[in-house]
Length: 108
Image (cartoon, rainbow, N blue to C red; front, top):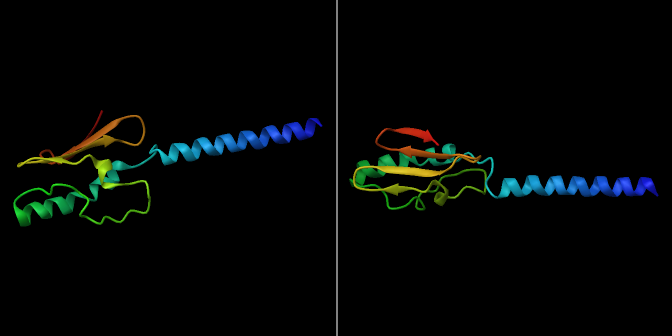
């Protein structure tokens, strides 16, 4: 009887731990947004050279990335006449951003 209870507790514990890991992965923890958003930079720069203005959004670019969790909206792309930025989660607890003026990523 005791052995059955221990087995049931172990199974439930395993399922809870597995569910927490899957949930953390699905909501965006441990995402590498810097790597993902960096893939857009050459396309944005090329668009600016050809058209003389920055693109209005990133959805027109077909960036292949293996992970289904990444979307162009995750980069929080903003632009004006002279520059563009990315701003969002670094995938852990902080915030990251990119400035086209400095051509550098920053962390907060």
